[in-house]
Every structure is written in C-alpha cells, then in structure tokens.
Length: 592
Image (cartoon, rainbow, N blue to C red; front, side, top):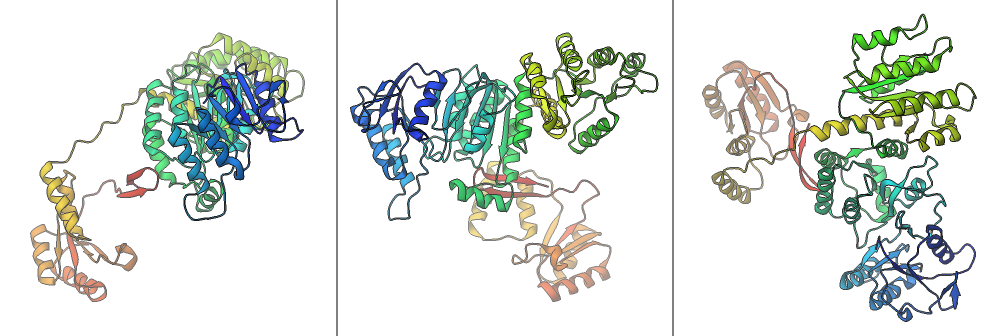
C-alpha cells in the first residue's frame, strides 16, 4: 500500500472542487511515476490518463485502489477492488449507516478486505503520503514544497495530518498517514512499516486509541531496539474528551495512566500539544544527540526573558547545567562590566561587540562536561540589525564550531521572522518556537539520552508452583477474602507483609494481639466496605489491652464483628499497589 507502483482512482473527475479532481491532482503534485487508472463511467479521459468505466475493466490488478465514493457505494467499490485483485485500499468514507440488523457497514468492508488480504487505510481518514516515494494517496490538498526528511507522522486526526504537512518550518517527512478508523489496518502496522525504513529516524503519533495493543507494544519494542525516538500525543485524557473520541471515530480511549506505563516501558516521549510535537520532531530531526552532560546551557539577550526561562524550566523539570567555576571564569572575562557570569547567561550589556561575547560564551559552555545541549534564546523578530544578520551569523558560527546539540529558541512563536528562521533551518539549525514547547523539546532530548543508557527492565521471577496451584484453587472457590488471608497469599509469592489475623470476636482479637505483640492496628474486615478510612474503620498504634477493648467495641458496634488485627509497620515509604484492567492494555499494576 504505502509503496504502491500502480494506482486505481475510483471517482476520478475533472470537476473543479471535487474530491475526484483533488485525488488526481495529488498524484500529479507528488510526481508519482507509476501506473494510474482513473475510474469513472462519465469520462473517457481524466488528467491525460485513459479513464475506465469500472474497476473491473482496469487491465491489471493494482497495488492500491483509492476509493473516492460515498458510504452508499463503498461496499460495492470494495467488492470490485477485491475482484480486480487490488492489494490495498484507501477510503475516505465515514462508513456510517443507520443502525440495522446484521454486521455494520464498517464490519462488512473489513470482512471483504480480510477475505482477500487487502490492507485498508481508513475509513474516515485523509489517506497517506510517501514523500520520497512520490505517492500522495489523498483527496485533500498537500503543499507543493513538502520536503523529504526523517520524520514519519501517524495520526488518527486528519486535521493534525494536514497541519503537520502544511507546517511552515520546513520539517521534512518520510511518511504521513491519516489512518482514520482503522477498520482493517491498525496503527502498529504503519509503525512496523516505518521502522523497516532507513529513511525514518523519528516517529510521531497522534493517538485516539490503540486497537491492537500486543502489536503496538511489539512495534514500540522494535523502535527502542533500533534507537528510533517515538513521540506520542494522546487524546481522551479527560472524561469529557473521551466522550468526544467515541463520537468522532467510535474509538475506545483507555486510561491515561495505562499509556504512561506503556510509554515509560519503551522510552516513548509523551507530548501534550501539537506545538510541543513540532518543536520536538524538529529538534530530533537534527543528527545531534546527547552523549554527555546533565543539563542545558542557554544564552539570552534579555534579563527578564532569562528569568521567565528559568521559571518555566523549573516548572517543567528541565535541568539547567551546573557549570564549573572554570567555565564561569572564561565567560566572566568576555562580558561587559556589570554582567554576571552564570547559566543561564544574560550576555547583553552595552551591545558593543555582542556577537563576539555570544560566540566565546557558547564555546565555554560547550567545553563544560556538565552541559548536554545549548540554546540561543533570542526572539528572531523583524527588527533589523543586530537581530537578523548578527544573530544569524552567531548561530551559524556556534553550529559549525561545536558538536553538542544546539538550537535557537524564540520565546514567542508569533514573533518569529519567517525568513530568518528559514535561513537557519536551511543550515540545519533547529529553531524552536515558544519557551514552553521549546523547553519541553529539550527535556525530551535529555530524557532520550537517559533512556539510551538505562538498564533494560528484567522480567520478574515466576512464583513458586506450589503457591500458584494453591492460590488458583482458592481464588476460584471464593468471591472475597479477608485482609489477613490476602496478605497470607501475597506472602506466598515472596512479598513482605505485616503479620495479620482475621478475628470475629473480642476473645480472638485479644489472642491475636498477644500473639503479634503490641502495638497493633485493628481494622474492620467487611467486604461491603471498600474504603475503611471513609467510615472511620481503622485504629492504629494500640498500646495495651484496655485500648484494644475500647477500639474493638467501637468498631464492632458500628461496622460489624469482623476485624483484622495486624502488627504496626515500621516507619518508611508508604506505597499503594493495586491492579487495574485497562480496556486497551489489559491488567496493569497500579503504583501510587
């Protein structure tokens, strides 16, 4: 599909403003040089190609059929594509129909594809673009100057697909895919395909859901193995947005904590906005990665903006490099009187010889072992000298004379002068737009280095077979257990627990406390009550018999006779462990 060399275009047209005309225009715009077969009974020729009245009259099986037809005709078009022997299909149709008995339209389309081994991009998507392959399988406008580059972008949002394609910052793409509802081909299939291409060095995704969790995790593991950084922007993080996800594509959004667990396991960088994603993939499109150092060093031309930079860096946990006294000494001798050598550095004094001060200060930062990456934090406004040629030349000089990651970061995206930014980008220098997304992109760069040198998580040792057998039988025999019995089962798996005894009378409570030894805790044990503290059902640090009797009489009179008597845990770190069954990723351990 993504490397098709023959394409049938169903619904091709010459009508201005039509989907059929746009599909043909996009093939032409991309420079596709494979076989093209327009299909429309109303034309004999479209865009210089012979036009066929039906897919079944196309003279050969095609790699890809682009179906620009409405929901009412999509099932028949799919059947014709299958009979022709098409290897894959792109459909923009929403695949929606009024509820009826039997399989839905989407299910019937999927069944046709499955029966004939066809990949399907869609429905309700915008298709895909293989930039170096010059294949634009879409019915929506793409930019003339879409340049090839190292980024693959996979999106459940067609609008985000278009927004990234039309970025004005020169980000180069290998693949762009608007996968839509994924009635057949899920996100992980595109992910695996991209990871087999040497031309993809960065992957970004906008996710509404994960339809094949096992395959998705396997693909992320492959990305980690290949050292290809992956960025993910998830939607449906709130209850309100989850409902909108369902309404948009029928997707089931899982709990955000499950995403975080999976992303942490495979080193995926989670971004919170499209702006942050754009800054991150631009920064990672540069071949420079962090290999040493612990924090960033930055040089500014404004004291106020430097303070803002530090505030936001602190807020987003972006480490500032603690540079050496030797480094500060090198910088101090270059500065105008009254300026303090520091990191971050406000290097603007009188403005006289500022370019030299910037260059020499960056050289000092670059040589410091604590510095992992550097940023030239200036606003690139259209003010003229020294904000254009002077600053641009400083950035070029620093870029060519250093090897550590380096970027220009503008505090206000709306103030970035497009021409100046383009000149820097043409020289390979990343230009980050906005203090917060820029800082978060730099943090991803530092985190990536930590992940690459980290220790791969080891699978846990299996539980003793005797414990597994006995506990399997017990779990199958009862609906609920006392807390004391649950602790006993955990101990069988090698988990350290406090001593605890289930009791249903004061005589049993008295015996348990004597056996365990004071101080003890007494807690209600009622399966109907999930949170003991909410009903004042816990007594801690009981020191003797009288206190024990009073605690039990109070609890039993209000909440029933069953209690757990347990030893008091020693002081330490308190953690909450639980199990959640995520609708996408299945059982997960909750740690809080």
